Length: 64
Image 1: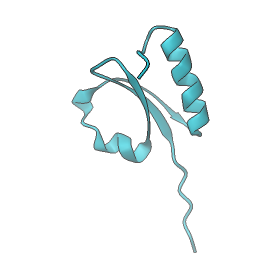
Image 2 (image 1 turned 90 degrees about the vertical axis):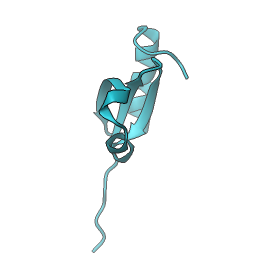
Image 3 (image 1 turned 60 degrees about the vertical axis):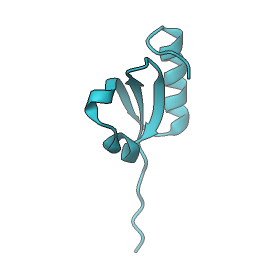
């Protein structure tokens, strides 16, 4: 039986003030000291992209 794994997406604000969209697996690999803020988990990458656009427009993140 195949096990289905749902990917959860997060937005992380790094030290350089940019926000990246990353998966839950990638989030586990980033040292906590490199993350200023974090938003999520989002059920789809598209939902995370929409939230990131809102964060950029609100001045909370710099575009890449």
